[in-house]
Amino acid sequence: QVQLVESGGGLVQPGGSLRLSCAASGSIFSIQAMGWYRQAPGKERELVAGTIRDGAGATTYADSVKGRFTISRGNAKNTVYLQMNSLKPEDTAVYYCYADIIATGFNYGMAYWGKGTLVTVSS
Image: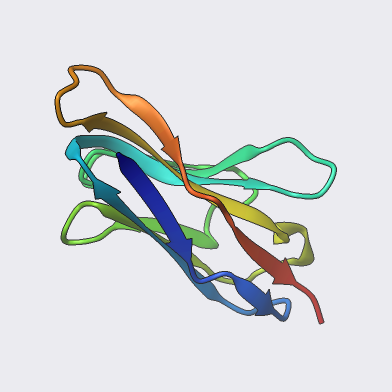
């Protein structure tokens, strides 16, 4: 089995920073992509940032977070981080880690999700 576990959410004032972490564990053959989605109350889940393979390749960001958020992969390559700076109240949401993983014994990738971590930006 494969699991994704997020950490780092919490309450922060507008203009502040938070760093989210996500670690993948289990029977992993390879990780094709990792990233972050978020879902605000009453809204659909949206892509925040994503990175392909080891992070040295393509990355993508939602327009609303460009220049403020930075996604990176850990040295072990099974972790992904989201550094969030200049946070705004509209960034308040549950943030979900996702990964496209080929599990051991399989020859195709599947999408895995963490349970989410709440980020609240408020004064």
